[in-house]
Length: 395
Image 1 (cartoon, rainbow, N blue to C red):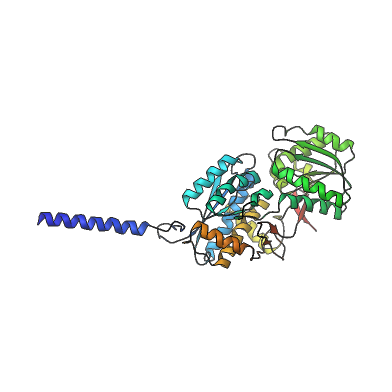
Image 2 (image 1 turned 90 degrees about the vertical axis):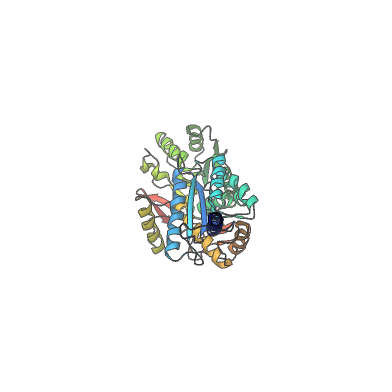
């Protein structure tokens, strides 16, 4: 009898182990929603949350989280909730790839990222190999969408360059143009190359070209003096706000007061530590989003963002990420995808649906935004000017 009871106990114990294993198992492409065992969509994101470019990455992190919160409160995507996880890459390509691997281990099925161009390009080799859908909110290099699984919410660098020249020419802001750009980044070089090409079509004369690199980005006195001596009425800055803040301060010290015009990397200049924001008065930039806009969608987003981010005001990177999450939602719904599908199957379904959807987002006008099979977004450009220490959308 004792032997029988012992055998019976072992059988029951084995059955319990198998039962527990079965309860805890899931398909490779599905996501566990926690204790309930509910399937969820898992969206990951990557960007700089620390360091000089943290304002970009934190904007993406919080903007995406606002969208995820809204979607979950409204019932999810196709009835499934969304889990979101963000990893810091410190604006470093290798760390961005490490962040991708961490998110992949977590169970990520779709990537909103990376935030910056070079990091997004580095990660795209991984997403392509895994056939995972990648939608970068703000990686603007054309190389970010070189693979067929990758899409952008922001304009490409060439598009920013072309549209900047067109805006300057059509609004007759100036005829003599100087350019100061970072030749060591694909972002800055890509914008400037197309700007220079389009400037000729707009009858704009580029009278001075001043390049710098990441190893020499503190003293811009030579470039500014060249621009001033050449009589440049406008200085085009297809660069990030950290260097732009130094340029504005140094231009002021030499009594040089042209129009300054930048692109999306300029967003954030008003938040630079110890920067006299009065020096940015009149600065213009192409930007798809201004937090002071009075439309209901923007006001709602800004309010939600501030509650999430301890009162911080969202920038265009936050708005791009918010739109990116909603674009994925629209594509998933269009393709009728479920979280139990594999990463590759989700990618195939979503990338096909991306070319069929139209998303009216924070960074588009009423016509919305659409995507080509190349991954490039099509939407109306917008420009802003800094007035009284705030961004104001221009007509």
